[in-house]
Length: 118
Image (cartoon, rainbow, N blue to C red; front, side, top):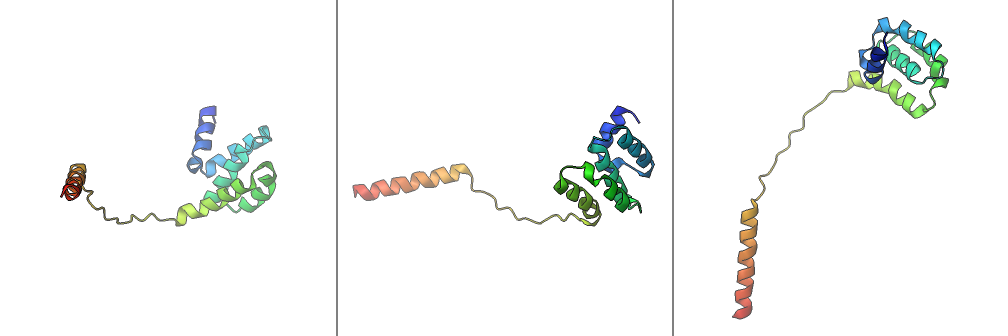
């Protein structure tokens, strides 16, 4: 795995497959203080619904300092599958053209001036 591949997979964890798990585990052994690799491993295991997910979570959770981020990553795997996007129907009113608004304002000003004069 090249540096470009690693960077691409960190940026797009959804591209990781079961075949990448062993390579990610090797990276974790080589760079034990890097948080990116355990996160990538847990996301891949969660996405593939691996039976080793719980064990790996217990094994690597201490390496990830931001627990809230870890929680979001773990739970977002399930939400991506279940989420559906619905397009809301919004009716848009045609706005009054500016020229009409200015004309109305001028007319009301003229009418008000004529009332003052009379």
